[in-house]
Image (tube, rainbow, N blue to C red; front, side, top):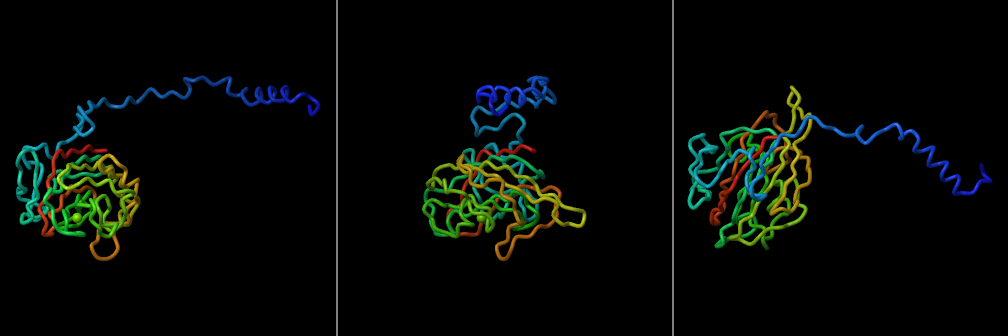
Length: 255
Ligand code: MG
């Protein structure tokens, strides 16, 4: 064999390699079932698809309650948007969720004042596990030219994960989050079987890429997990002194 021209060796080699494939057909690797469910997409990528639950469509707060006492949510609804009422406290969904896809739009007021964490602070607790700020917070803040600790700026998982980039728009402009939340799973004894994961886009830009959380958000101290099965989504009425922020067009899809 060693005296044969290289081209003949190459052809012989190709035949040896491809021979077992000759018995295979393209159809062998085609999958035809189950057929994915048909979903009618929204008119634009920010509009709810047909299988989404609209959590706020600009009309009322029927899907929301006060976190404090579960009474009707008392934030302000005007002109198709809802605005935080800081005296009314956090609000959360009546519905409970495990893993989901969420779209939410928010706007820092154009007359925002304050600095650092005291400038347009709010947040989305991707799973609200109790009263107050209990849960897993995706931070909302005016992070347009506003210096703060980077694991507390907009797009961070508060005090756990720095956003990959800062695509913040100016105060007064609408911004969006698109979030994929994978709920944590727990063993019977409460230990973590698999952590929560979050992927998030801020204004369409990836800021959290399948980040594995180490527990619930803690203002002081290290994150910790507490077992839960399903949980509401909660919006934060932060006690900073800056003008309250607004939300619109919130929808969610169970995964
Ligand atoms: Mg916050």
